[in-house]
Length: 87
Image 1 (cartoon, helix red, strand yellow):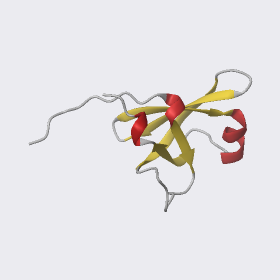
Image 2 (cartoon, rainbow, N blue to C red):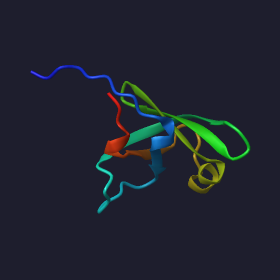
Image 3 (cartoon, one colour):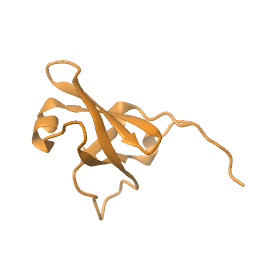
């Protein structure tokens, strides 16, 4: 039987998309729901995501927030490169 592992994923290593991507090198793609979008500074925002019982943060540009029309309740796909996973 497997054992529990705790991973740290940095918000800067999580990108968001509205549609599940295919033919991509990113293999870690999770369906997520936006819980909160908060402005970090003039150029960046922090997006709080819910994936089942797990919370994941994504730091993206404010331009991307507007372009993707992100708001609480929106469904997105969170993408995490495998090399970004720290145990």
